[in-house]
Image (cartoon, rainbow, N blue to C red; front, side, top):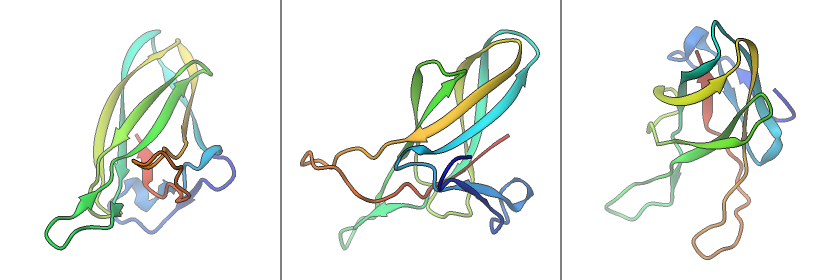
Length: 134
């Protein structure tokens, strides 16, 4: 992990009670993992995550926010992964994405940049969604 990204231990439904938080607001706040592949080629990477973030809601409708992370393997190009709302930061869901790995140790990097609002102005909020892997 780099800069603001950190492991927190207050999540009873996360693996081992711990989750990685504060990935985002630039590449300096990254989650970097080394994974081992028995063979080279395409693999399904399953990510456990939580995301309770919501935009200000109207009186009749919540407005959940799907957060994202850019995933790259071994320094290659990145792929955007969306993390729909789980409605609570201690409710973990799973999303699987294909990744191409080499045989042996591979380095995965999760980063996120804030996207502009609908009017084109950049936001200043930070990504606080909790993401874990398995």
